[in-house]
Amino acid sequence: MTDPLFRTDAYLRETPAQVVAITPEGGIVLDGTIFYATGGGQPGDSGRLSWDGGAIDIATSVKTDDGAIALVPSEPGPLPVVGTQVLQQLDWDRRYRHMRIHTALHLLSVVIPLPVSGGAITAEKGRLDFDMPEAPEDRDGIETRLNALVARDLPVTDDWITDDELRANPGLVKTMSVMPPMGQGRVRLVRIGQGDDQVDLQPCGGTHVARTGEIGQLRLGKIEKKGRQNRRVAIHLAD
Image (tube, rainbow, N blue to C red):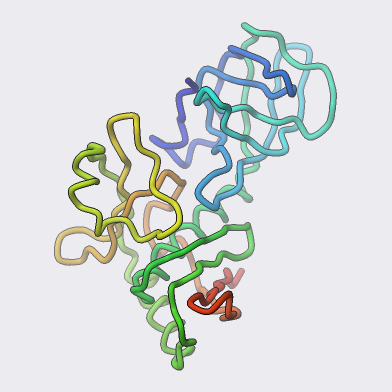
C-alpha cells in the first residue's frame, strides 16, 4: 500500500519518497505519494520525479490492483530502480484547479439537492449528473446561490467514520451509481461549514480546498438532458 499523503495535506506540493516497486506497465510505486490517483471523477495528478542522475515527467497516477498508487510516466525512459530516493513535485496549478472544482461540485449538490448519478472534473470545469426529470427554470438563481456559498468562505474539513456507521446513515451518500470506497474499516467524510453553518457532509476521497472562498467566482454552464431522468449540470471557474 502507498501512503496517500495528499489525504492528510492536499497542499503538499513536493516531498521525498522511496521507490518500492515498478509495475509491469512501467508505473512507479512509491512508499508515500502526493499524487492523487484517478478516481471519483477526479483525474490523476501530473508532475515530475527527480533523483540522483535522472528525472522523468509524470502524466497521471492510477490505483493498482493491490491498493498501491502507480505514477505513469509521460514518455518511455530510464526509470529509478527499487530503493531509489526520489523527489516528487506536483503540477500544482493543475491540481489546485481540480481542488477548487471538486469543492465547488459539493456546493452544487447543496444548491441542487437531488440524487447524483455521475460527475467529472477537469482543470477548467466540472459537472454533475442529477436525477432531474425536468430542467431547472431558474438558472440565474442556481448560479447566485452557488456563488453565495463560495463567498461565505466556509471551512472545508474532514472526519472519518466506520463502514458500519456509514451503512447506518445511508443518507450521507448522494451518489446513486458509485458507493464510497469501503472495506478498509473506515470512510472519509468531507464537511463544508461547521456547527450551525454546516451546509454539506458527504463521503469523498478526493482533494479539496481548505475554505470555499478559495474557489473564486463560478459560472453556470450547460444544463443538458442525459436520458429520461437525468440532467447534466456544468460549472466553470471564472479565471
